[in-house]
Image (cartoon, rainbow, N blue to C red):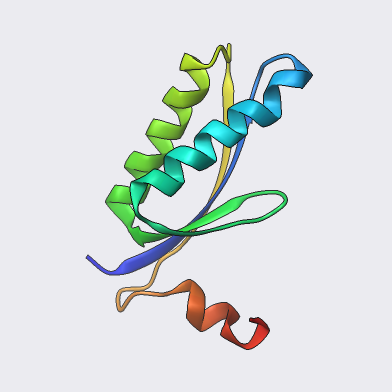
Amino acid sequence: MPIANLSLQILPVVEEEKIYPLVDQVIHMIQASGFKYIVGPMETTIEGELDSLLDLVKRAQQVCVQGGASRVISVIKIDYKPDGVTMDEKIHKYR
């Protein structure tokens, strides 16, 4: 399966002081996944096979629920082409 990019903004519904710690747990889970990723101020972009990335989104939801979220809102953007697409080809001139 070709490489895709998935950007994930995850918004756990918890008390305000618990939002960043839960988002940090999701980012740690993404780091441990072995996928290439870039953390941004509003979302994290991850590179990999689409099915695996969608499974990662499910795991991110579970991390938030296990951390006490009563609800989890996820905003997802996917860039997919049959030949694959990488983050480097999009941003290499800015790095």
